[in-house]
Length: 272
Image 1 (tube, one colour):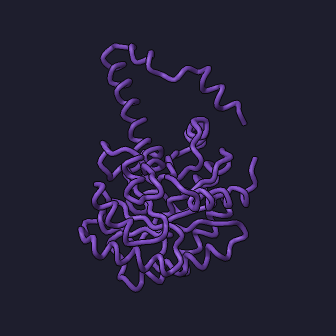
Image 2 (image 1 turned 135 degrees about the vertical axis):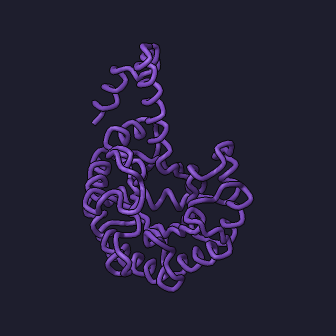
């Protein structure tokens, strides 16, 4: 197994090299191991996927801080890959208090993480949002392992359809020390290209909010560095689950032919 420091260095190098980084989102140890078996180079946790697994409505504080950090520990410990964490808004409004979640995520084995500029009720005031990013960057730099800090501008998925303000925030977050920039809600190539051209740090796009007809190659050509999918793989798994369950309720078991063979699961899970 790689050490955490090695994972941190690898994750940083994946952002520095040429080309796109595909960052899929497992929600437990099993899905992390399955994604690793496919050759992905790094993983990212998903708050929606975790909420789904717990049977809760996804939303602000759907899972507790302690539950989120335990999920980080489980996923990071299950794989040899670097793991980035969705750390919500840090579970605090105060900049320094919110930044402590980066320290605690690192203690759980995580080597990268994002913090939002959303309070749970509203987008933080611009200056306050920048202070939070600066505090996060300071905390990330103080850790004993290389840690890649991502700053999220939540406007576009929180009802604030103001791309100019989103870009302004990302630019300020970059100056405040964020390693990666992230604005969930970028849907089309033109918008992705516009945002990517206005910043110099790596830009993450989440395809759960993007046009699903786009290809990774097309997205990379806009200047985007990293693609994640949020809770979409979780929703895909649940869609297959519900289809099989509905068929079973109707008395059909043909869905058995579409299941992953136990022998394949054993092969993946015995690799460690």
